[in-house]
Amino acid sequence: MSLLCVAIPVEAAEEIPVAIERAARARVLGARLVEWRCDGIASRLEGAAAAEAIARLVRESALPSIVTVRSAEEGGTCALTENARIALLARVARASEASDVPRMIDLEHASFAEGARNDDASLGGTGNEVVRALLASALMPRSEDAPTTKLIGSAHDFAGRPADLLRRVAEMQADPLVSIVKVAWMARSIRDNLEVFDMLASRSKPTIALLMGEFGLMSRVLAPKFGGFLTFAADAETGGTAPGQPTLRELRDLYRFGSIGPATRVFGVIGWPVAHSRSPAYHNARFTEANYDGVYLPLPVPDAWEHFKASLGALVDHDRLDFAGASVTIPHKENLIRFVTERGGTIDAHAAWLGAANTLVVHPHGTTEKQRLFATNTDMPAAVEVLSAALATRGRTLASSRIAVLGAGGVARAVAGGLALAGANVVVFNRTQARAEALADALSGKEIVLPDGRTHVTKVVAGRADALACGCFHAFVNCTPVGMEGGPDPSGSPLPDDVHLDDSVVVMDTVYTPRDTPLVREARARGAVVVDGEAMFLRQAALQSALFCSRW
Image (cartoon, rainbow, N blue to C red; front, side):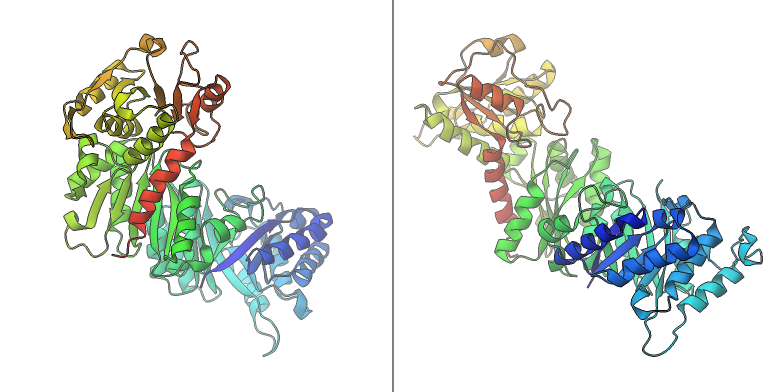
């Protein structure tokens, strides 16, 4: 079982009482260790005073302690000379009182590796022999009953993956002074997480392997699945000690950290950006309700087919990840169709016709790609359902309505296609007229039978911008990211000011973060019937959840 460790920086002795209170609160939130980051204390106090301040943190902590005084070379702020820093940690480890002895100290392996040159002669000698002897003495058991500090040998790179990463790990695994190996580096893509998982699977000692930054969240959340010794968390959103470090509440409540094990299936939302997405909260809550052994994560994949293909392919193909499915959002819904097609998987008929999908299910027992990969589009039925209900409040049906769809991407395909299948007159508007025309051509000409028995041929046309204000539309549906938090124009509205709105018109936004987008506020203020993005999100997510939680 992986431990949950809260990281708390302490810059000065005056902060110790508050820091101790923070550790006590963290214990209630599920932390089982505290890492005291004492760079500031070490820099501001003399050796004996710094050691006593750190001893107080350890002694009064509600949690077992890791003590770290990080060098500037590996992301810390300690101003001590190298040997003074190491000597302080050794002094902390061999505290005379048992209550003052930390469970672990964390020291960069480069600071004490065998054969490394040490140009600081303050301890005598020019190599690391004296440093290693000092550490060995500090870590030596003093009696059967006395607590003994263990050494975490660590390596960090805030720029990216170290070129000599595997050599560093092998050296730490082989070093007799190192009880726990720790590596952390800045992730370049979500694919980097898979190397972390492979590293944990091949460990010969307890190992902490974590990635920093937006792409590294998976490594932190899935530590229990792959046997990571611990994962670090902040006790508050502003209290992290590394980029991308989640909070205790997020790990415990959002990602169900305590329920993750070797058999946990992994799902996620793939898009760019995805930090705003409510999908992790929704789907993880559904897993809890269904008693389903799964976890759902944000999976940021930059725009471009090559990024999508490489990232999703790596997740699907990893033999220990148990990747079981994904929600796919802007800008990759059309890429999902291409991916499953190239892999020889199965695409349902509506998604294939639309040319866009938002849901991938990976069946673990499929013996062929056709059986294993399945793509569908839950946006389409969700949009039809919620817009039909809104029009009904004004005595209208989809088949009797003229609807303007704003956008020409994956969401617009699903919405326009679904409405056209339901018999609506659909006009697509887009900043690039050629894209609107291409979408209209793709969705026109499909013959269907309506519920009343009449034959209907879908017709979608491309409109020009000046036609938006014609006063002839019964509904407007925004399928662009305009107004989305974290998007390209969060304060904008896709409707021009001269568009006629009153209580006979329905305005629907597919953006759900924030719920009250500029378009929603504007339409509500002008008296229109408003359908915010949450309505469609909840319906399409419920359809996805039913697929994800299927017992295959």
